[in-house]
Amino acid sequence: MIPRMEIILFFQSTLRKSWRQKLSGVHKFARERNWFIQVIDRYATAKEIRHAIEEWSPHGCLVDRAMSRGAPPDILFRGIPTVYLDQDPSHPSHLHPCLLHDSAAEAALAGAELLAHARAAYAYIGTGTNVHWDKARLSQFRQDVASAGVPFTLLPATGLKEAIGRLPKPCGILGANDVCAVKAFHAAIAAGFNVPDDVAIMGIDNDEMYCEAVSPGLTSAEPDFEGAGYRLAQMLAEEIAKMEDERKDGKRRMRERDLAKVEFYGPLRVVRRGSTAARPGLNPGVRRALEYIRRHAGETSLRIDDVISEMRCSRRLGTLLFKQETKRTILEEIHEQRLQKACDLLARTRLPIAAVVLQCGYRSDSFVKKLFHARTGMTMREYRSSPPAGDQVV
Image (cartoon, rainbow, N blue to C red; front, top):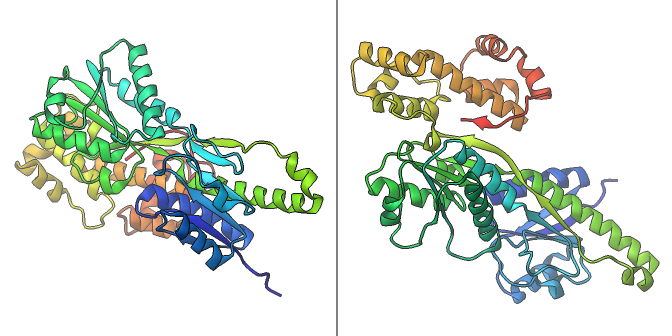
C-alpha cells in the first residue's frame, strides 16, 4: 500500500532566484519524506493565512519571513508544527524555531573579495528599507573597511551618481544585494566611470537575472539558499516529531519545552565576473572579448571570428593583442571558460555527463573528457565525487 503524502504548506514568494533555490532545497528533502509541498505564493493578511490552513489542513508549515517586518504570526500557527525562515531576530518567535541568514558572514565574504583589490576607498549601497539583514551587512562591511584603514561611505538613495562621483578613485562598492549593486553600476557608468578600473562593484545573492544584466557581469557572493531550504525542511521534520511526542506525553511535556531555537545558514561561494576583474589598464578590446567569451562560451556556435568582431579590429591584430594581454590564445580562453563551467555543473548539479558536455558548448564527449582530464588530473565522474573546495570563477 502506498503511504499517504503529508501536506506541507510553504508560505513563500517564488519571484526571485534565491527564493526558488530555497524551494528547491525543500523539495529535495520532501522527496525523501514523501511530503507534498504546496506553495502559498501570495499571502499578506491573517485572513489569507487562515484560509490556506483551513483549505489544506497541513501536517506542518514553512514560513519565509525575509521581506516581512515585526513579530512573527505565532498565533496563526499555534498547534501546527512550523518553522520560520529569516524572521527578524529583534522579534523572535517564542513558539516556533527559525532558520536565519548569517548576513554578517555573507558581507564578510563579499567584503574580503573587494578589499583584496586594495582600493582607495569603499562604499555600501543599501535597500533603504531598514530590514535586519541589510543592517547586518552594512555593519559588517563598515567594520571590515575600518580594519583595513581606508575611507568608508554609506551611499544615499538619491543623488547616487553624484555620491559615487565624489568617492576617491579607484573605489569599491558593495551592494546589500544584487539589485542594489546594479543600481550602483548604472550610476557609476552614468557618471562617466569605468567598471571595474575606476569602480569595482559587488553584490550578494548571485541572481543571474541581475548579474548578467550589466556588462561586464556583476561579481556576487552566493548564500547557500538551497542548503537552507533543505535544512529548513529538516527542522520542520524535527518539529513534527517533537510535537507528536508532546501530544503523547500530554501537557507536562509541553510546559517543559525550551524556547524556540535559532539556527543560521551562511555563504556558499563567490562568483566572480568582470565587475571586479583585477586587470587594471586592460586593453578595451580585449576586455570586451573576455566578457563576450564568458557570456557565450556555453554555445556550440561560438567562433573565434565572433570574438574578434567584439574587439573591433583585424583578426591579426586581435589575436596578437589578446595573447599579449592575457597570455592565452582566444581558443585557449574559450576552452578555459567552458571547462570552468563544466567544473561548476559537475560540483553543483546532478546533470548527466552528456548534458554537462552540451551545456559547456562541446559536441564531442571524448574530446572534452580529454581536455578535462588534462586540466584537472581527474575524470569528470571523479571530479563530481570529490570536487576541490574553493570559490567559483565564471
